[in-house]
Length: 147
Image (cartoon, rainbow, N blue to C red):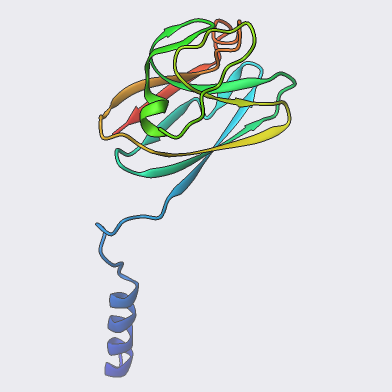
């Protein structure tokens, strides 16, 4: 191999070799598809401290919602509300005839909703679900992992 070619290959390898792996990453968007009666993906893995935008697309014919936490009470929500910790500016949501625990984001049929959050530092496994009456009971839930 010619010496000039070796030098060029070394320079290219160094330039493409990657920079500081500890450099902060830009905020990411996580796409979540909502349907009767499921979320896709059904498992979300987030990193403690990262900024994430959840983009929820309801492709179903019914209104749904996204709530996250621990200790679910069907048709009401989570006794331990993770979402309020992650998005403290989340506006309270109330709907006639419903008594929710915690906060969430309602998504109308054939509509997108976005929610920007900063993942709390507490690592662990949580759940997300829809607490429109009967939806959680029909299996409309998933797993949220914070690592």
